Image (cartoon, rainbow, N blue to C red; front, side):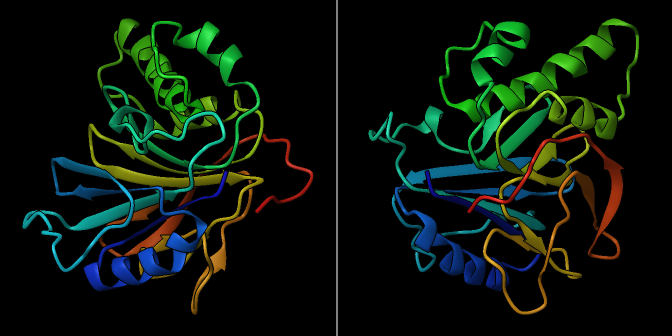
Length: 226
């Protein structure tokens, strides 16, 4: 399955990144637009026509995903397209998990969605709600992300939005992902982009427009997959 993830503060750069990444699949496309306190999600089959696309005026950061059709499901549906959401999380994914059925039975057997990425969003939620049930009102998103990533087997490059605060995180193991010093990220590399190290969690600093390393996670990736 060919997919790509990308994002930017700047709508012009976002559209450039979309064009660079859509060669990895144009079966489905999506845009998450973040404002200071809200999220707007648009998903559609096929390409995005930016001549007709209207950006939310309050949005200040944009995350995208493009995908080729999976071998298991070739009919487009909103619920089986990225991003995948739970109460406090949004996740877009490039890669293939090999243990999502096991994770679903352990952490989120209630979900009906068969797409592996749906399990990531709901496993993040499982650990979040577990903290809340112990009386923790404000959870540490990095600790939740670390715990979740260490349950995953397979390959992944992830953009993760913690919806409670609209913080944006990136991480990868196996799958490729690049970022720059202006707050952009992209599966496909471009001028000024460097590869995100495996096993590292970075967070977008909205004041400096840089990606700051905020954590590490154990992973098992002997080599990178396209």
